[in-house]
Amino acid sequence: QEQLVQSGGGTVQVGGSLKLSCAMSSRYAGGWFRQAPGKEREFVAAISRNGGNKDYASFVKGRFTASRDNARKMVYLQMDSLKPEDTAVYYCGAVDLADPGTWSTRQMRYDVWGQGTQVTVSS
Image (cartoon, rainbow, N blue to C red):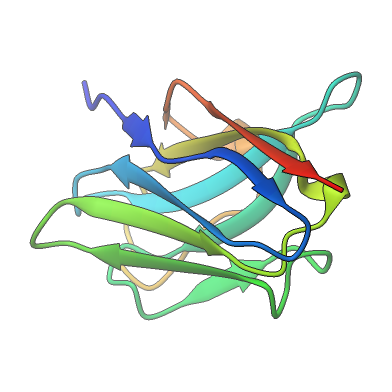
C-alpha cells in the first residue's frame, strides 16, 4: 500500500511562506487537509492525478497553491501570506480515482494519509 511521507512545515511569522511536500505516486489524486487544536480536520486543497485540476477551500484561495511533479512522485502545497489562523497540523492524502482529471474534497474518500506536519504562524 502507498505510504505518504511529508516534509516541510515549521514556524513562520505572519505574512510569511512555507512549502509542504508529500511523496505520492502519480496513480493518486492528492489532497491537503488540516486540523487545528480542538477542531475537526478540514479540507484545504486538492489536485487531480494529472495535475490539471485543483480546488481550494475559500479561506486559502489566492494564498495557497497545490502542485505536483509526477516524474518525482511529489505533491506540494505552497502557502503564502500566512495568517495565525492557518496554524494547524497539515496532512496530505491520496485518493484512488478512475478519472485522472478529478479530485475530492471529502476526507472520507481518501485511502492513505501522510504522518502530518505542524505549521505554526506567529504574530
